[in-house]
Amino acid sequence: MSMTVKDHELVPEAIVDKDGLKVSKSPWGPDDEIGRLNWITPETNRAILEHLSGGHVFDLNVEYFVGMPSWVAAGDPPYGIWMTHTPDGSIHDNLSGVGAAVHERYSYCGDSIHLYTHCGTHVDTLNHLGHHGVFWNGWTADKDLGSRIWNKGGLDKYPPIIARAVLLDVAGMHGVDELEAGYGITPQDLQDTVAKQGVEIRKGDVVLVRTSTATCRSRRGSTSRRRSGCARRPARCASPATRSASRSCPGTSRTRFCLSTRTCSRQRVPRSSRSSTWRRLQPRSSTSSPSSASR
Image 1 (cartoon, rainbow, N blue to C red):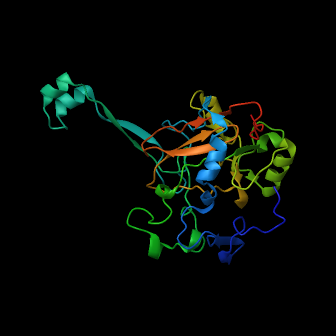
Image 2: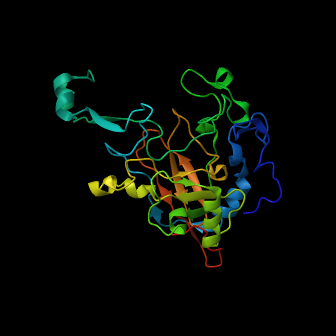
Image 3: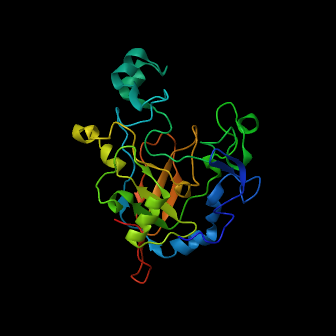
């Protein structure tokens, strides 16, 4: 992973450069809303998919349950689920308006969920964080923010993400099962992990960073949720080089990811979906290049 030659797509021109932070102008033009997802094209998709077949499924989604870890420090709601209709209740209160006789014949159940969109597995779009009121490619609230959602940068503009994937085990690089609570992952950590694992990160790759925070998120067994650091801040990545170009904002759909030893793809699913699935797609033959993602 060398950056000896400046690449304007890796180091774009800054619109705002203040307090050590930058807001970038898109190298793909003033109308760009997807950033580095421009690297994903039908040609790159074909180059990957033609070497793959179906395979095993790994579910890397964070499980949703009442009391699950969630960002609530700023007053946002935790995850909640409740029934809105029950078989007996529908007979008694007739909320549907079709009458008790209908509900005696057809037992009706329904439920609802309520959560902050940064609860559990999610993707941030490029309008999630700005600097001094300016966001990616010069977006500002006075011009680009509607009554409910941003009018720029929504997931509806995103292509399916199909790319070579590399997993960096930062906790393993440090020789521990779990990073200390609140540990900030630095660019040097990532470079050391790349060197230790002997992997290569190429332009257009999807980089997965193992922080080991998921060990705190198990629903089964209260011990795992009481472990040191689990109730406090998780490890975080401080490197802008690893921030995904695929980000979601409140009001957009959840996503489902497919991960192979060589590829990662994303499909849109309804925002009410309670799970995300990663699929491992294996090469058709042993002549394919080996996986760069650690187990």
